[in-house]
Length: 109
Length: 399
Image 1 (tube, helix red, strand yellow):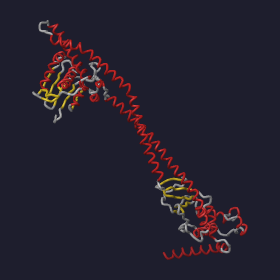
Image 2 (image 1 turned 60 degrees about the vertical axis):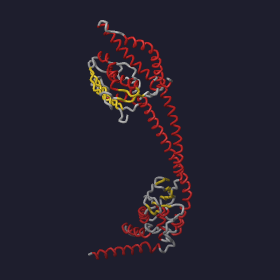
Image 3 (image 1 turned 90 degrees about the horizontal axis):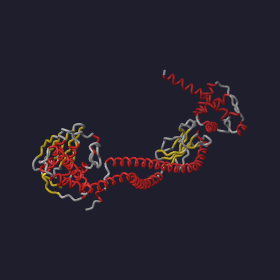
Image 4 (image 1 turned 30 degrees about the horizontal axis):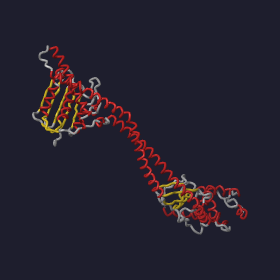
């Protein structure tokens, strides 16, 4: 039974990571700006990961230039990302993976 | 023989109490004001020091903010938190949660721009941008405490100077405060001196004539009148002796000799027998024979006379007096009106008269206390209102 649960968790995690790659990384890796740069832009504006999550969720549901944290010249150069066709729940999960990957907590030394 | 010192003023207990209360209040108020001023000065010095550090840290923070910005912009290359040799630092997010810290004192107060705590000065600033997520940046330096030492030195020197000045001022005020009292006592002393001087001739004349008067041949009614005059003249004589002692003798060296106190006490009881008879006072005695002490005869006579005189004066009609004499103790116990417990310490004060009806100058027991002090005798007073008073004079063992 225990082995079953471990297997289940790993499967879910693996599935979520695959979704994150498909929904987010595939596009962002093609851009000349690192994926981390976006996080630091959010961080300089919102300070905590809870506030970042909230702001990011709001933006990704319906991306608009007015709500973007990126500098104007980058918006002009790269444009605004298209709307992602995933559920709110799935979007939330993708954002959590993103924050977990780039949050500074425990990394500063 | 100088009499100028005879009028020297001895402040009585109640006056000393007033003076002590005044000084206590004066000292307390002075210390309170000095303490407040010292507190203000210390706080001012501390604020000055913090103000200096605030300016300095504000300037130093500019270069540090640039370092934070650089780290924020290039975080992917290096996660090393920027450090500065001039101070320690910490960053907090918008929810006041710690992001990273190198502080020695972890207890920070983000609401206070600058403060001193546990020997460290902490300066809090809020950068325009949240570099690394930092809403609050805390810079910390160690306090060298030089300002503290300087402030304490200044406070100590100023306080000592002020205390000295205030003490001198207090002494001057106390003298002003006592001046009317001293003037009144001096006037009273002068009055007594003048009165005593004027009494000398008439008292001597009355005493010498009344004592030599032969009353046996007179009818009983006249004898009674003569006896009353004799009692009055002896009372006058006791008073005169007291006043003379007060003005002259207590500043004169004692002429000590071996005095048979037993004989002297009998003699003095006999001297007062007319007054005792007049008040129908019963005398009981337990006087040991040949109790001898080396003492000035006139002075011990004044002590005995005053104690007997008081025992008669404050006794009731038909009362009693018990005399006890041993080599260690002279005790005179009356059955008079007694003295209230709180008044007992006051009875030896000069010019103190607890009973305003009985009259007198209030100098008798003061003389007793002075002579007792001169010879190291202890005076014990036991008294109960409406029952009586016992005064014991005790000689020390080595006397």
